[in-house]
Length: 105
View 1: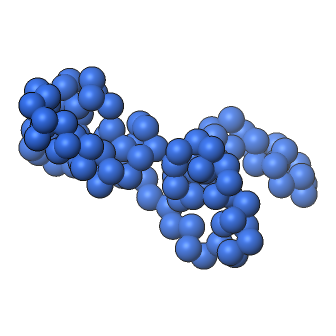
View 2: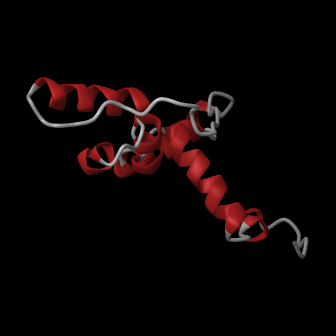
């Protein structure tokens, strides 16, 4: 994370790459700056497009199942859900995951 910040990555970009929240990244960078570590301030300019997913509509028992795997990876349930959807879609695994019908997509 520190190396990414030194190369000028924004906290939101570092968060996206590491699975941490942008606030957690900013706090950690602030911690290092206060202790004299040379970390450049975040670049100005337009923020990159962010992919967001809201896992609040997910049943609590399912969130609990996902939370176990999210915790093992050090990410939030929302980040894990987004990553699962991203991987399933990009690797054309929707039919295999749902196993309800073949769509030849």
